[in-house]
Amino acid sequence: MRLTLFAAFGGAVGSVARYLTVSAAVRLFGTDFPWGTFGVNLLGSFAIGAIMAAISGWFGGSNDLRVLLVTGFLGGFTTFSAFSFEMLQLIERKAFIAAFLYAGGSVGLSLVAVTIGYAAIKAVAA
Image 1 (spheres, rainbow, N blue to C red):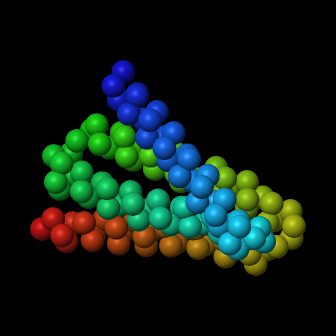
Image 2 (tube, rainbow, N blue to C red; image 1 turned 90 degrees about the horizontal axis):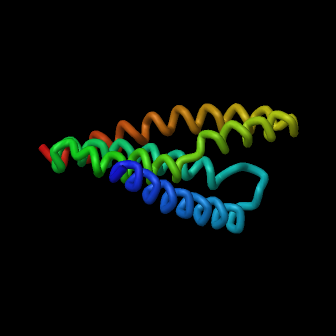
């Protein structure tokens, strides 16, 4: 039950953080491109790499921290379900170049971000 509460609390905080981040991006950049979701997914990918490295290197593989921060917070913060819907919207608007850049950038740069986040913490922990 404790881990379920950790996941729920982390998810609630992560979801609010995503909402605030995406709302700010819409105010700053408009709605022509889903910059908020794009940024959240990149930041979340970096964070999961860094957090998982920190948990394994400094916190003895703590399952409590993993559930709270990765499953909970980052699960609520990152938005690949929103990504899928926004891809559909771009395709329906026939914004094929934007859709291609969004898909490729989201996946490719998220892989780069998770690698950098993980390596950065591993290097500091070494």
